[in-house]
Image 1 (spheres, rainbow, N blue to C red):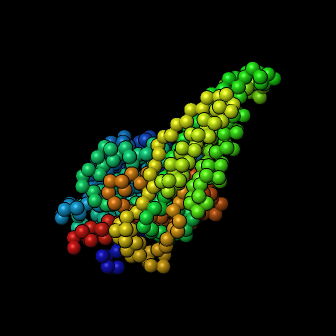
Image 2: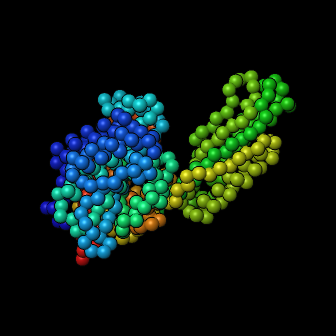
Image 3: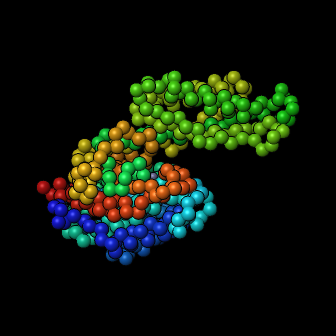
Length: 393
Ligand SMILES: [Zn+2]
Ligand SMILES: [Zn+2]
């Protein structure tokens, strides 16, 4: 593909994507409940005259373009679809209309971009087949793992690409890296069962809040005292729920958190340490502590070959100077990792300025510069064309 045949997002296509993004933004849906989003995707694919299959992990949609000309000339592009259980606190006219739910990670933008890429790819005589994967439940429940188990990659996809918008970089930047770029995530729940009682007679009760407070503090030593300082790791407690009254000792407490690592040895040690410290605190305070891990994610590791194609596509779309490295792996997790356990793939980041007064991803004030929609759509189309071109030779 030379510069003359570069996929170009014109004003009309940009507005089409912007309307899609805003429509989804107004009506965000949680993981596995993306019903309206799924319907909108199907309507837009109908509008473009592109075939698709529905019902992937419930709300997922997989559309296909072109035909496999030589063996292995089949590439996948993926967008996630779900919002988050976070109240939208921004002023924008397209702010969420659903109380307590918002698109605080930009997945509304990813859907719009992939539909934009579909519109661009329609204009090409493709050297193979492109599957557009609209995947539910990235934030919660590992939708990628689910649709893969249903056969999403069984149709012969040989490589997969995706991008995540990122307000840490200015609009127009695309970061491309080979190797590990996102960390393993091990979400956990700690259920502390004590014995309730009167606030004035603690000797008759067994206080799960005091045990829980010790436990949260003790868990901080997993990173500070048990992890090689040259390696990265995070243990975050995001939730601590207990009690109903100031004059009663609670019956139980629930602590939830997540471990992030990008080294298997560090990961094993912290996971084992969490169990050991929980057992120790349970013994110390005479409570029971149930430790449960769920929805674990592997690391996102971009293959050399797909990163090369991703970089070439990025250079064509935004120019060499705007293609950067993200540097060290992020401690964020991404269920794109599950695709890469089956086929090689590359996840990139699309820089998107944060509008004035807006906040970071996963916050109630999150928003992004919509010009990134044009960058994302062009890159997704370009990377598919570039990858198929490589297969033809
Ligand atoms: Zn997110
Ligand atoms: Zn996300």
